[in-house]
Length: 211
Image (tube, rainbow, N blue to C red; front, side):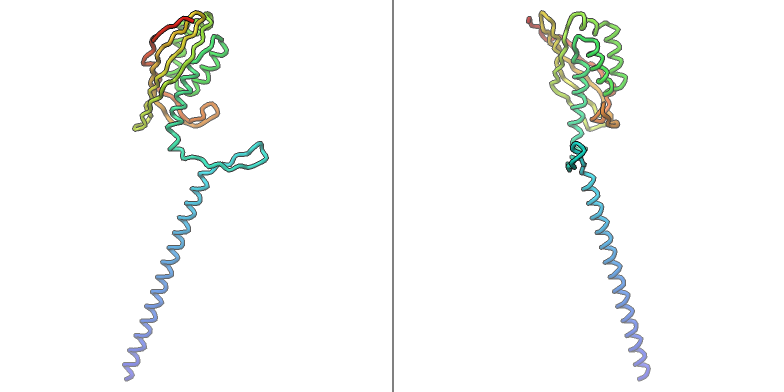
């Protein structure tokens, strides 16, 4: 009888320990789940805040603007970078200061390959002929074809040049190729790209019309 009572007491104690152990395990699991949820929610909140930018309006009012996903906007920025370079590099007026200003801004968007073309054109007297002949050169970019399957990005530009003289207007086709590398954004390079291995693939007369 006494042995049975001792056995029941041990059984009761073991059962109590098991219940306590189960309660501790359940408590630890709950704490783990709550901690994990809190961390996940904090990460989501931080990501949401990172997608917002604050803009000062004249230093007085504060406006909240949602920023777009950079990866989605990158192809458009790449095309705009290449388009802007071509407009600055090839749209020229018959004024030395204006030519130097445009070329200087264009060269900040590209590497030495574009500078080499500038030096070559200068040595051949191309810019001097524009000035002496009072010739305006206007570039119209038709399309910029981008290949984003590899890096650096491969770009090809199709454009038309209008050589405007006092007596006539000559239309020329212009096809160029280049590579595009990511770089740091700045006031002079807002899109954060640099043009490399710039090459003029085609530049020939299409037609000439009298004015």
